[in-house]
Image 1 (cartoon, rainbow, N blue to C red):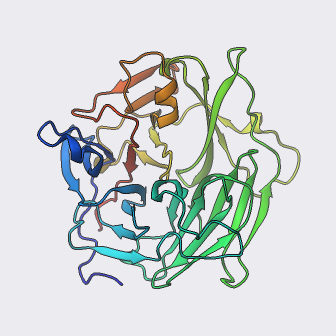
Image 2 (cartoon, rainbow, N blue to C red):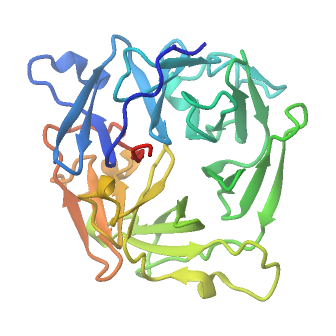
Length: 347
């Protein structure tokens, strides 16, 4: 199951994984991923697999799903040696018709991925994924198991592990608890039924997304909004703190966070979102009080400004301006980019 080598690679700063444009081998572009180190603004590593894969990131680890539904966890800085096999993504214990039929594309099976701990140092690690909206819900497995356990629910927008518990956000903006304490009877319960205030902006139809991210011990909900017809520069964000322990007498507007102070948020479209503290030396190069976000492939298809390729943008919480992060040799096609969370050096 697990390679003997420990998780020896340490991500010293947030890494951006993106599709690399190789002029010498255009046919292999979809298989090549490169990691950009924000601190030194240079490529960190080249990942080139013989088989097409979809990639997801959580806690500094990568999960890959190949065309034949094989799933592996790997260390992005030492991917040749440290790997953990997980159940095939279509091997699911469920009565829901179609989810394990093998008819879906490998890259259309899940929408989110999150770990409870580093799988290379914690054998008790749990892996959660949210399934594509055609079947809805979420599933989990433990290291060494040969199937995923599926739990039905409405489509899930985001997943996170916070203070020993898995949480989910559904499409209506409700926050849910994903309870796997009893693996034979996993369940989903509503933590907060009061929905995030997703209201139209700019007086027109708005594309909106929700993310959950931990920052300085608090669980935050991030609302991203952009006019359906408009450029990336019109993207706006609102940030709210989840009110644990407060049942009544509050509104989301009372919990809005206007200033992230020295922290930066990194939002993952299909991977785990995270935050870093700019005062830590291993997160040097990150802009404080900013939100880093990636272009989704469906947004890329609708963008009127063809100068913007699937790339990375930075939203400044203070002046609400958006700037593009320069990424050398990024593939000019609607393929996913992902953030890889930094892992601080052990003491």
